[in-house]
Length: 128
Length: 107
Image 1 (cartoon, rainbow over the protein chains, first blue to last red):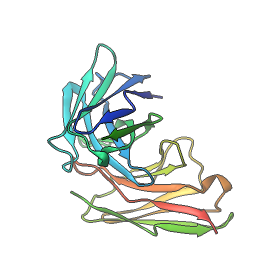
Image 2: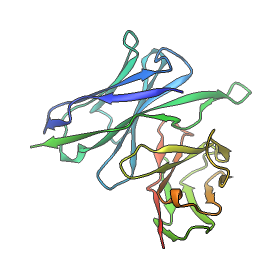
Image 3: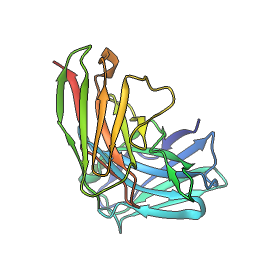
Image 4: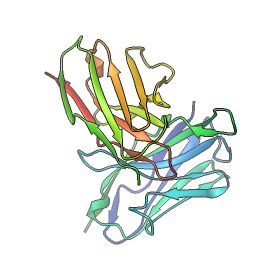
């Protein structure tokens, strides 16, 4: 079972860049069998998928955040990262990293099974 | 983007009840849908994937069904540990989205 741990500053100043890292154990960020995602949850609200990164550094982002978000893999340290630029108070949230293991469904179809492992989450507060 | 709409937003229930949560997609997602349970201060936990497949270790009182645009999560014989928030999530397209959540609370 993959285990994930988020790390990074809990306080970021307005208009600066939020940077978080997720360290992976029990799996490899170099594996083609996983997607690695970031998800956030505003206080007392629902879940928002931020984006994902996968083997070779392929990324997909939530269109609502596109232009401010980037993700990357660090294969030497088996971790992946999130950068969110020009943050405002609206970016204050608990940030989770999560993994999705791929499953082969036949006929050339590989799909994830949802987010099957999660980090514990880290609260990031944007201050003015 | 595919929009996911859950109902109800809040579901008062008692231990032993059978409860059903509905999730509707704004366009067909086949069966590429997952359900999660989240308790306060904790990360979500995967319950169901591909609409109806029970994740390992999840009690059999949880079940999922549906395809296309309409899906349900049913908890038969609600247990005290099941009072929590539940979210659906589609992964049909490149951009993944969650429903807004349903809170199962004590009646």
